[in-house]
Every structure is written in structure tokens, then in C-alpha cells.
Length: 128
Image 1 (spheres, rainbow, N blue to C red):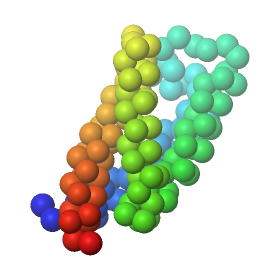
Image 2: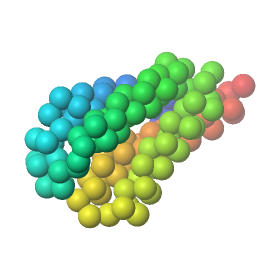
Image 3: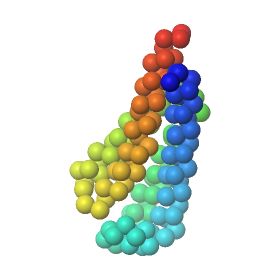
């Protein structure tokens, strides 16, 4: 796959991940007990803490935008976005239990992003 094609797919998956994060976060803020029940997780008390975690996910997603716009020019942001995805994977692997679903969510986006970014940036370096 050519460098530009890899970077194009990286950007598409970044945008898909940003939208997915925001949708999940908004639903989690609006219907916290329902989400926790659906995922078979214990109800947190007070509900402000899972809602705040969802709000932080929205803020994190905003920081992903520069890498989705131009991963070559915003190389650090793009690499950091992938690192953050895998940070989530590792965190929820350690926490374990029913929370692993959040780590799997990050893994689904993080793995293709890591591969496509590595191939795209390597090709971009060669083309300079």
C-alpha cells in the first residue's frame, strides 16, 4: 500500500474513532445507569464520576483532531493519538473484569491506526 493511501486510511479511521468516542461519551453522560447496566458493570455512586470520565473522553477526542487533519504535519499529535489508544488498552487490561470492553474499543481503533501511521510516515520520509 502506498504511503499516501496509508495516511488517507489513517485519517479516516481517526475520524471514525473521534466520532465513535464522542457518541459513546454523550450516550454515557445522558444515560449513565443504562450504559453501566448494559455493560453489566456495577453502578457507580455518585454518577458524576463515570459522567466525568465520559466528558474527559470528549476532550481527549478533540485533541485527536490535528492528527486526523494532517498526520504528517502534526506527526507528534498522530503518534501521541496512537499511544493514547494503547494506553487505554493497557489500563483496561490491568483493571480487567467487565471493564475490558473499553480496552477492546481502543484496540479496535488503535491497531489499524498504528499500522497505517507507521507505513504512511515511513513512506513520507522516503519521499522527501
